[in-house]
Amino acid sequence: MTLICLASCAILSLSVMTVTIAANNKKPEAKTISAETYRSEIYILREYNGKLAVFNGDDDAPSEIFDVYINSFGEVDRNALYKGITAYSEEELSRLIEDYTS
Image (cartoon, rainbow, N blue to C red; front, side):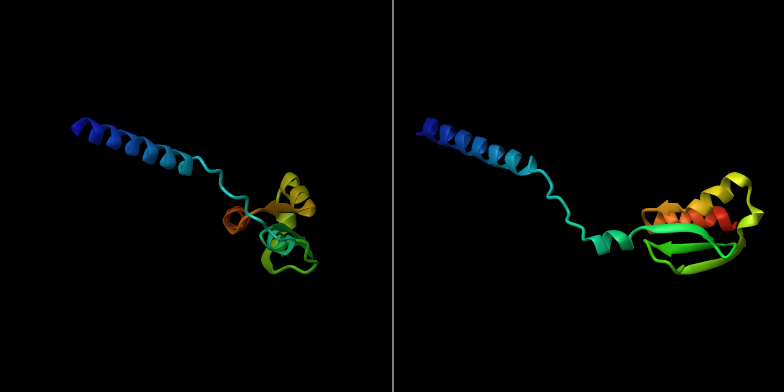
């Protein structure tokens, strides 16, 4: 009787371990992002009327304009800002703004 109980417990333990391992090995589901959501998460820091400005995605009008003139920067920074510097998160945008406004 004890042997049967031990064997049953061992089989049950192996079954639980197998199910647990299988559940932990599932691949995460891919997150579906709409074009509108993706677009809204992209920010462009660039020149607007000679000043530093933030644009949301492909918007033509800036969402924010800083009282910082582009001509006060060196040539490399000016060229980068004329082309536009992309930030893929608000945190990245905040770091860029801090760099260019301080």
